[in-house]
Amino acid sequence: MTKKCYITTPIYYVNSVPHIGHAYTTIALDVLARHKRQKGLDVRFLTGTDEHGANIEKSAAAKGVSPKEWTDEVSAKYKEMWKTLNISYDDFIRTTDAKHEHVVQAIFEKLLKSGDIYLGSYSGKYCLSCEQYYNESEMLEGGLCPVHKRPLTDVHEETYFFKLSRYQDALLKFYEENPGFLSPKFRANEIINFVKGGLQDLSVTRTKVKWGVPVLSNPAHTVYVWFDALINYVSAAGYGTLICEDKAEHEAQLKQIRADKFEDLWPADLHMVGKEIFRFHAVIWPAMLMALGLPLPKKVFAHGWWTVEGEKMSKSLGNIVDPAEVAAKYGTDPLRAFLFREVPFGQDGDFSMESFKNRYNSDLANNIGNLLSRTLNMAAKNIGELPEKIEGDYPLLKKADEVEQTIDKAYDELAFDKVLEAIYGYGGDLNKLVDDKKPWVLAKTDPEAAKAVLLELVGGLRRVALWLEPFMPTIAKEMQKRLLPGKIEKYPPLFPRLEDK
Image 1 (tube, rainbow, N blue to C red):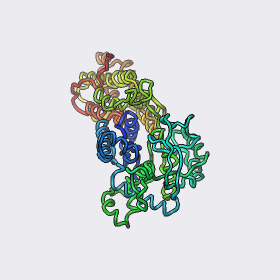
Image 2: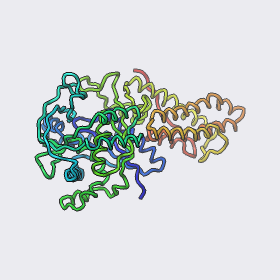
Image 3: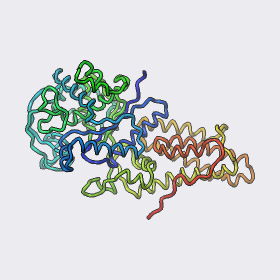
Image 4: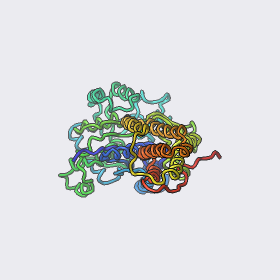
């Protein structure tokens, strides 16, 4: 069996419900997955939820439910959101799944045996919200958390450490030999300089957090939530079959692991993450894989954050954008397309309804939708039926091959904005053809010439519909249906204009 194209989102932490930031990452990977499937690749698209740790205990207690009841409820909301947003994932992992927990335990014991994990004690500053220790160089003035801007907590406890320091030189060598691993390039120096500054061994268990995976050989400890969560990428790929097969206590778990062979999926082709968790995926996770003797992923891509109307999203400001609400009001597909048209992927972006409506009207209603309606209305009068194939010397159909090469290259660079720019630009070329040739006028003097213009437009629109499918799967299918060979039907506008209220 040839290796599948294995791509992943981060698994989302269930201390709160999904918002536009989670949707952004997941839709991005969905767009990429759909494009790769169009190109004939065998894609395995993984997403899921991260469900252990002190914050989950805290959120569940505040709601008066058990941690498992809380995680069941919130994880289901993520699945519901991905259904609403038409996410075509192949696998959804939860870190409370028995099959995952057993792999975490087996990996921990394996690294304990190899000396990559050892028992010690820790005293330091800890952020309860991040579930992460910070050293003095990382803290803000006044000993504040660099992410949450709140005072850090003094923590003293026995803990197991992962020998992260052992892999400092190996990581730097890997970054140098694999320049595409840290992406986008402008974020690479942040990681390289962090590693060059010296890596400290990482505390990977907690004795004061009960809601976690217990260490098999010392159940007073639970595995640190990040160490647990990162392992999802290999546990979902079937790594457990390699390390648990001779353990009787894991027989039930082994029956749950997918039939895919681990080597058919690993190494992952891409981990897509937000910039705030880049370091975990670009430093800690590769070091863990080195300790396990496994190949490293081919790329970790860290995209930017979304603000809303110029403000950082926060519950206190009441500006959390619920993607389900936007999708219900304006359509799932226009939302999907907007998120990747507005800003270069990788940079920070700002979500405003004014920008959304402007993009919708200019890119979709005026450009694509109006073009489709005009073309089909004119074709109904001058052609009658659309042919299966459109053959002939049509300049814009030749140009479509060049545009597709541009689109494929932009996908390789994860430049989704450039993909849409190329598609909408080609739509502009087709609109210009209408304005220049005026087929409704041409039909009065030269019907064959008018028919040729309309066939060129139909051929071009068929390509546009195919290109738009990864971003707007439902609308693109409708567009393709309207352009099928045969009698032309009367249809409502594909993108009704949004009026200012």
